[in-house]
Length: 147
Image (cartoon, rainbow, N blue to C red; front, side):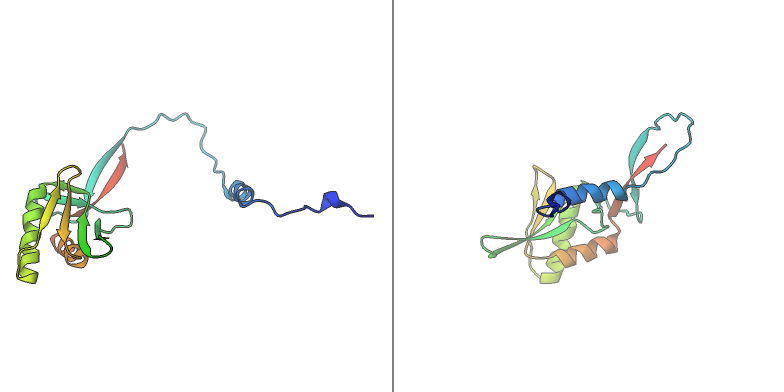
């Protein structure tokens, strides 16, 4: 005598397993029964190290500078994109042109994308630009404070 209802015909779906594990892994914490009013929160940038430059760069959640290398046209065109710039973008542009022209002894194109405030540099210059940002201490992390 076989009992087929005790044996499932197939394995459960991964979503079912995830849902079950999520329910078992959640922990409940007891909170005091005193009524609490929601406290207002403000978002203020907190500088890692103060800089005298008129521009700042918002760090990524992993505390890295938002400098990205991009290849276009089948890998034939190399660019470096700098995102999350706040302050005087033209001053950063001129500082980067000065830095990169010293390194390569020729003028390097640094273009400003007016639509989104990003800088695009010709060539793969991510390491040089990241080291420049670290030396100048222009990175900051956005912190949400509770009042």
